[in-house]
Amino acid sequence: MAKSDSYSYFKRTSLFWLVVVTVYVGFYTWMVFWPQDVPYGSLGPLGALAKHLVDNHYPLLYYGWFLMWVIHLFESLFAMKICSDKGIDSTSTRLLWFAQTFLYGFASLGLLLKYKPDGRSKRH
Image (cartoon, rainbow, N blue to C red; front, side, top):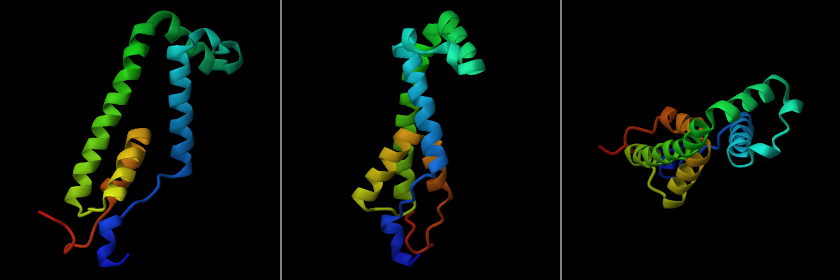
């Protein structure tokens, strides 16, 4: 990577995390908003656990769903600070980091935290 590339550094999270987080958030959303439609019996041990949580801890699931998105929002805002600290100044690149971190959380933020820009392009 050239020294000036930190201006627009972006790396997409791995396909593994894209799939895992999408399936998890999708299933969690399904459990919270349409629990009557989840085929618990067809999901084996996961279905039994999901049914137990819906039946016995629904308020925790419901508020936890909103908390999950608040946490992702704060991770995204933290990603903006990290972009600034690492000299990533391109608006479109920063928006990519924000969106990816909002949707995939630490799977995205971890890539940004690992990034080591050239010392000359880093701001203090």
